[in-house]
Every structure is written in structure tokens, then in C-alpha cells.
Amino acid sequence: MKILITGGSGLLGSALTKKLLINNIEVVHLTRSKSSKNDVKNYLWNWEKNEIDENCFIGVTHIVHLAGAGIAEKAWTQKRKELIVKSRVLTTRLMHSKINELNLPISAFIAASAVGIYGAQTSEKVFKEEDEPFEDFLGNCCMQWENSVNKFETMSRVVKLRLGVILDKNHGALPRIANMVKNGIGSPLGNGQQYMPWIHIDDAVNIFFNSIVNEKIFGTFNAVSSDYITNSELTKKIGEVFNKKIWLPNVPSFVLKFLYGEMSDTILKGVKVSNEKLKAIDLKLKYEKIEEALSEIYS
Image 1 (cartoon, rainbow, N blue to C red):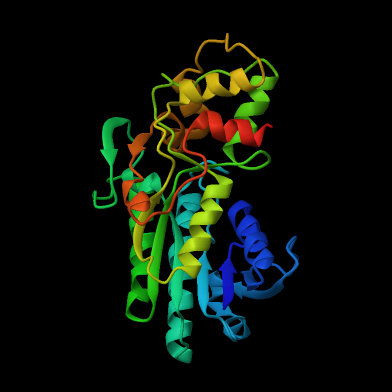
Image 2 (image 1 turned 90 degrees about the vertical axis):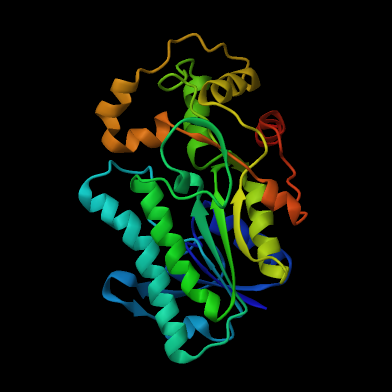
């Protein structure tokens, strides 16, 4: 078994690489720059120029596709939105066309997707994998992303994992919120009633790992915990961890809209997402409740 990972230097890619190496599984990365914090062989590609080092595929049995420009890193200008979509869709198409051209045998193609497919909306409905993509930027982006992954179904087993917010001590959304709370300036965003589907980094890694090694796993899964928690509840739970009272009023929606424009919808809105399909294939999560996840992260 040999795994090729795109986006391997990111939070999830790095953690997954470590788990694979610990289990004596060979890993290589497909990257835009030679430097890597992970001690694995790197191969270069430039999807904008349709260039890829074909040597990256030598001996590869499984591909894990995590590459994509950060959703919440910068304001959504038209140019940024195009980059967010193209960095996911065109990378997938490039790999598919190259593997097809070289007639390479691939056992599985495992791709990240996101619960953003259900849209930037706030609803009491519990969304499942069979629900239609929402008609907004994120919904359409995820739909195009997954459609490009579907092309691999004619040549290999395909797994699409719709990730919630990944909780990790040092990276992503959690340290940003935690630092505000620790400094006594944390407060819920907007009305605070938007749901935040989440997953502990260890559980996310475990789901990807099992999707690689278990040949019976295929299809689309929501990779989230069972805990339906709102932004307001999460902020309070983090406050409890640091023994800090949340005393400031909520950050008004108009402030976030002024600062982040259209992207603020991803912060101010959120839905409940079911993980029943994941549980049905006996993929048990270690951290089901937010208290358990925060306890482990800040132990």
C-alpha cells in the first residue's frame, strides 16, 4: 500500500501522514512547493498550468485528495471565490486525466468535501447525505468539487467525506476563539444560534485512515460529531475550560458583514448535520460531545 496525499502539509494532511507512517504505510505528497514539514517525498504540480510530475503516481495504490484554497482565510472577492472552486475542481480533474492517460490502477480515491454543501443557512432540519446541495456559493462549490471526484468511480473505489469544523489546539477555528476567550474578549457571533458541525482532529484522521484500509467503505459520509452545538454554546463551553465568564455582548452581524462581506455568512449561519450513515458502517467516534473534545484538547 502506498498513499499519495494532496494538501499533505495542512492540518489534516499532516496528522494523517503521521498516522500512516506510524502504521508503516508509505506516503508521498503532491505539493506546490518542495518544502515540507513532513518527512516524506514531495512531487510538484501546478494545476493552474495543468502541470504534474507523473513520477508521483509510481507504485501508488490510494489517493487522498485534501488540496484546496482556504475557505475562511481571506475575503471573498470574485477572484478569491474562483480560486476556492478551481483549486478543488481543477486539481481533481488534472489527476483524473493524468491517471486515465497513464492507465494507472488505483484502488481508492478518498476526497475531502465539506458540510458547506448544505449551505450557509440556519435551520433546525438535520441534514443527511442524500439532501440536495444548497443554492449558494459554498453549496455550489462543494457540488462541483464532489462531481469532479465522481469521475473516479469508473476506475476505483470512491469515498467523499463531508467535514465539519476540525477542532485542533493549534490550528483552525478553535485557537482563534479560545484566544479571545482567554483574553476576556470572547463572545458569541451574531445571534449565536447558528449550529457549528464539528469533529475532533483525531476522529477526522481515523475516518480517513479507515477509508483507506477498509475496502468495504465507499460513498459519501458526513464526518461530524453527534453533538448539535450552537456558536453561543461553544463559546460558553470554551469559557468553562479556561474558567472565564463570557460577559461581552454578542458581536453584531453587521460588524462581521462589514469586515468579511459575503464570507460572513459562513460564520453567522450553520446547520445540524447527521452522522448516522457514518455510524451505520461502525465508524465509531472517540469524541462525541464537545466537553470530551475540549477536555482532551486542553488537558
